[in-house]
Length: 472
Ligand SMILES: Nc1ncnc2c1ncn2[C@@H]1O[C@H](COP(=O)(O)OP(=O)(O)OP(=O)(O)O)[C@@H](O)[C@H]1O
Ligand SMILES: [Mg+2]
Image 1 (cartoon, helix red, strand yellow):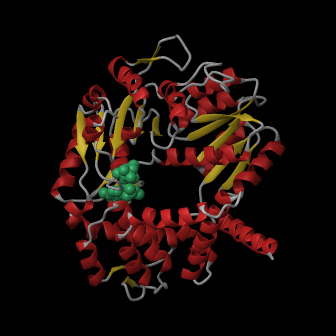
Image 2 (cartoon, rainbow, N blue to C red; image 1 turned 180 degrees about the vertical axis):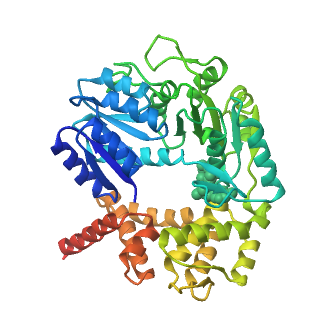
Image 3 (cartoon, protein in one colour; image 1 turned 60 degrees about the vertical axis):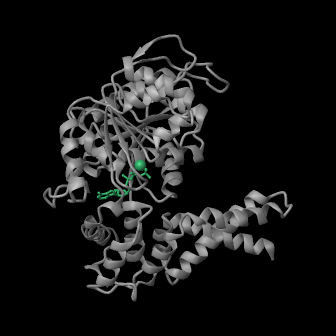
């Protein structure tokens, strides 16, 4: 469970954060002063710190500076009262991940916490196949010749500041490679900021990357520092670069060429020194042909590119990957699975893996969550029918949209004023029901299977029960 440290001299605020965030499956601890915060970080190693800017004795900004010197990769969100936005900007310059203005909207709070934790995990070291077992962090598994070539290339380019473009199908390990490049670069003690260009809607992405001035658009009540300014001297991972809107591409090109940009609605030219690693699973050349990607940007990004091969082109790595994931989930799920049956291995080696390593990983994970644990078990399709079920259904993964579009049409024909709500509720109810069936009503397992916390699962069950009652 991820641990979050909330720091505020007002104890009431600490407790209300603890209640709200704790409900979403995080372990929340508190500190009421800067000194206590430093002490708690060293003892408890939280994944995320959320800290008030204004505190007596050492204030939040001083504490932030101290924590960032001691733990450059620690993710910290600062909290300010609405009126102290200048201090929020200073906080970003000192390396805060983001800031929140109080009073805080709960939904916004949780979404920022999730985003910050995901981003923070990107700073966990990545090592290669063959490094000592006890080294911490994630590992890149694979010793087929194409993978060895990739390690060599990472070694050659990591230390220079050259822009890198990572190309490859979904789930092939581009993000893992981006992190490995960062960890072997000179900038390893500077920030590493991931930005997913596909996850942020158009108008917000510009402000996220470049910041904005007060009054730049309706709702821009204060100046905001963008990621490019915040990431100065660090490394930015521009994920899903193929989804970046054309209007922003020219602004990005300019930063790449001369390290300059302007905040949205601003006149000052700001200089920044950011190393870019970009990635996409789209075919950029065909996007260029369709007029959706600038070719000058493509050439600028493509100084060094790494093509990450799909899993079906390096089948000899499958066995090692299976063993790696089994060990990983044995630790996480406290199981003692030894391996998979020869029959499964053979099937896995013959399968075409449209979702690549990510798909393999999630099949093993689901198989291990669901297999009736034999103390020294071997996963086989007999005692783990789910494995073969998923494998078969994942062949039809592309059909999910097709199947759902029929359902969507049915809902749209209903003529109720709450179509959207009803559709989402039905889908949720069925997912939860099926997960409980598959796990023999074991809530912990069902939550794992759905990728949600037990608390969230309980909330959903309560909601289903309430809805049933109100229908009766
Ligand atoms: N060679 C590998 N060794 C170990 N784990 C891997 C390897 N490749 C991928 N993974 C794991 O598979 C999952 C997907 O990898 P990753 O997120 O890097 O894919 P991606 O190429 O960025 O995909 P997408 O294009 O969908 O963003 C991650 O959990 C990652 O840790
Ligand atoms: Mg990715």
